[in-house]
Amino acid sequence: MKRITWLTLYLLGMGLLTGCPSSNEPPTVVVSPTPTPTVTPTPAPTPAIDLSPIPIPSPAPLKPPVAEIPKIPTKSTDLPNIYTSPAPVPILPTKEPIEPKESSVAKLNIPTNPAQKITSTGIGVARIGMTYQELKQQLGNGYSFQVKTSFMDGFEAIAVTRSGKVQYYIPYATGTKFTNEDRIQHLMTDNPDYRTEKGVGPGTPIGQAATVYGNATLSFSKENESREFIGFGQQPNGLAFRPKPPKNRTFAGEYPESNSEYLKTKKYDAKASIGQISVSCANEQCGKQTE
Image 1 (cartoon, rainbow, N blue to C red):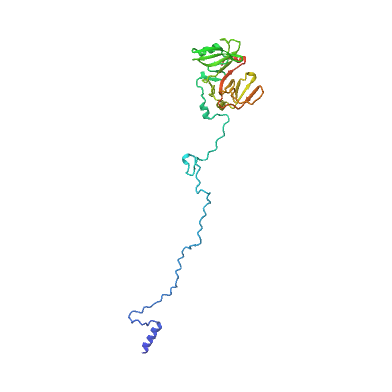
Image 2 (image 1 turned 30 degrees about the horizontal axis):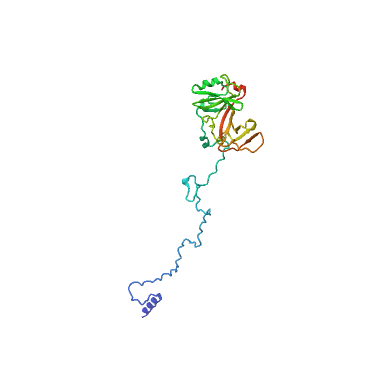
């Protein structure tokens, strides 16, 4: 009895006596899991999620009002739809004051035949300083020579004609005879087939001639039968130009009213053209020399 009591006490003391049927198996030691510290699942150190507003990089300020600035178009095919008219006009180069535009030069008929060229020394094969006989020999057959009296005040002239059309005139002093031995000192033509090396000839509008020879100034002298002349800013030496006014006009230029004997102007009718071109050398020595 003592032994049982002791054992019972022992088992009770050890806390192993339970209401479960006894078994030969060693008592299951119920080891209350050491109260695993109730680890409130400390969230595995989640990478510290910063709940503060994520800084969104501020976009570079847009250039209002267009999100994308289109490249400046260089060709008509590059034009985006926003253009309702052609791209901005580029800055134009400064205009050349006297140099003609290509389009102006193209309209002038540059002579290719030397026999139809006007130079400071002659018209066609006729040259200042050659004799009348030398000219006839140069021209050969097919030409006729007709004397024109009262050609202009103080002058008669020989009209050098081919196929019924006057090519040019050889003026000489009224009251004298122009012989085969006389030397040519003046030549004049109103035939549009003859032109200068720049393509200017009878029939060329004055404004067009000014694109190659510079600004035109028109003038006349009442003492010189009011013959009107044109002077260009870069006029070739030895040449004289006379205008042809439009129909129903006495002068090509627009002159102010004045009692002066000599008048000049830079204003002229846009339809006025060159009427005559003369080549002269009144100097006696010049008349004795040929080119």
